[in-house]
Each structure stands twice: as structure tokens, then as C-alpha cells.
Amino acid sequence: MEPGTAAAVLDAARAAGRTVATAESLTAGMLCAELGAVPGASAVLQGGVVAYQNGIKHSVLGVPAGLLAEAGSVDGRVAEHMASGARRVLGADIGVSTTGAAGPEAHDGKPVGTVFVGIATASGSSVREFHFSGDRAAIRAATCRQALLMLATELEAD
Image (cartoon, rainbow, N blue to C red; front, side, top):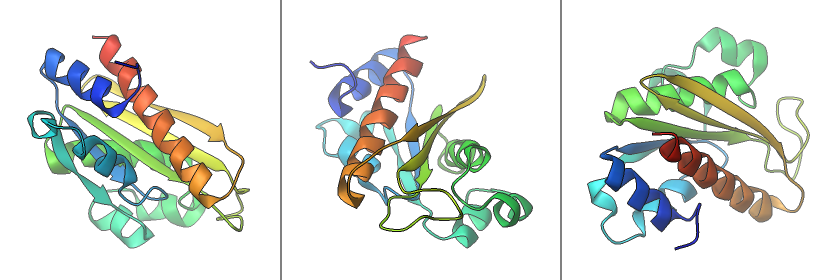
């Protein structure tokens, strides 16, 4: 099985006895759908929150309103809060989040292709910033790939 695929991530999570939840903005549920498409996903996947609007990021995931007003949604700190919020709201061991500017225009002053992926666990959180090129579909697909790779890395650390 190819590392970093949804199936490989779910197998690793199952083997580690860990559950996963997603919080997605620019990918709008693509990551959760990719994980959910794998047979047996229900053993690991708790669920996902699509938080496209800032109000949902705040009210459901607990992203501070002041941070959203100051930094906008395309920000590493927002990704961190989203991942932690997914973990908390959905009762998962690992939360993963995606936020960014998929285009066709810049968002919150960030150029198209700027993406943040967050991972949150009981022991802490991490965020990576990416700069993808291509159209909207390519940027969203690349974001999902990187989120899966980050999940795989987190599970390997166990």
C-alpha cells in the first residue's frame, strides 16, 4: 500500500488504536470524503466539520473571533485552532485541518495557493504552510495529499 494514501493512513490509525477527525475550509469536505471512501473507515474516522465561513470556524470549532478578524482565515494559527476544535468537537485522538486560498483570487491578502494544514493531538499541535500552483481543483487536491502525508507522519511517530 502506498504511504500517505487514505487507505494507508486508516490502516496505521487502526493499528495504533487512534481515531481521526477533520476540520476543512478550502477543501470543503474532500479530505473527510477521501478517508470515508475507504472500506472500514468507520473504525477510525470520527467525522468532519466543513467550516467554510469564519462564523462556523468560531462557533463550532472555537477559533477565536479576534484572531479571525486580525489574521483572516488563511493563517497557521487558525489551522491550529481548527484541528484542535475538530479533535474536541468530534472526540478524536487526532484532528487535521485545512485552510487556504484556492483561488481564483487572493483571500485575506494571501496569494492563491497559500495553504495551511494543521494536526492536533493530546500532546500538542503542528502546522505546515504550503504554496501550491495550479487551478482551484489542483490546489485543493494537493492540500488533501499533504494532509494525508502529515497524518501518516503523525501516526508513524507513535
